Image 1 (cartoon, rainbow, N blue to C red):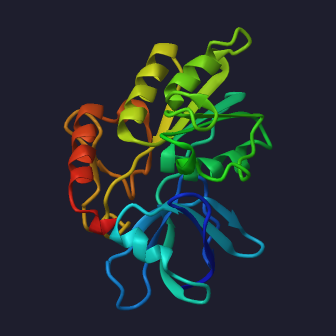
Image 2 (cartoon, rainbow, N blue to C red):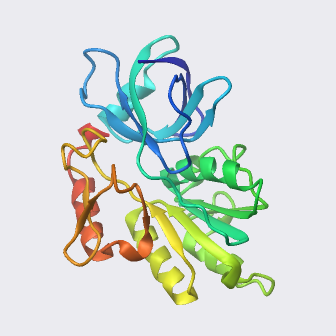
Length: 269
């Protein structure tokens, strides 16, 4: 169990949860499974990416949006209550020798990338691109550590108007930008990630993405988070991921699964 240190609203539907967590230090890209206080529904733990971790103070930060009954219940948890905590879990973002790390986040997908930027900016150049539909969906930007930070919203309410992919293409079109020295890391909506993969193929750069999936255990037991990874092979997001080389994902099949899940009941989230 992990005591709640704070759970505060930081944007329209965004909350920053801080736990006192006696766990091994997570690596960017890994996630934890959280369970609500005893007798609170939903009963199964749910996956959340790591927004930040302070090893000295054992403080684990998780940024989340209220998007269903589960996160609505989580938003009502107060200081001193205890949450079930399992983790860290999953495979993290791999290291890269490339001197420029281009990090691209869409909406709530920015959360694990903030943690990535804080670890990578000390040893390499980091360009962080954050996008959302509107300003109140942008996560806290003060935690980002990068050489440059670029922001866009689709309605133009904050930063450059347009999608984060439009922003990336604009930034990448600069004459002093060398894609040959870059590697891409991404997390966000499935459509965005598919487009990011195709862009990476066009530019001839490596691309690693963190995938989302509904899961009940986080340990590979329930088999509920299988994703098609080509050649009739399926991988589990919880144990084989959540980070994958974008070239290994069957984007057509994965898109169909995510769209179906988004149409289902929001009780799990």
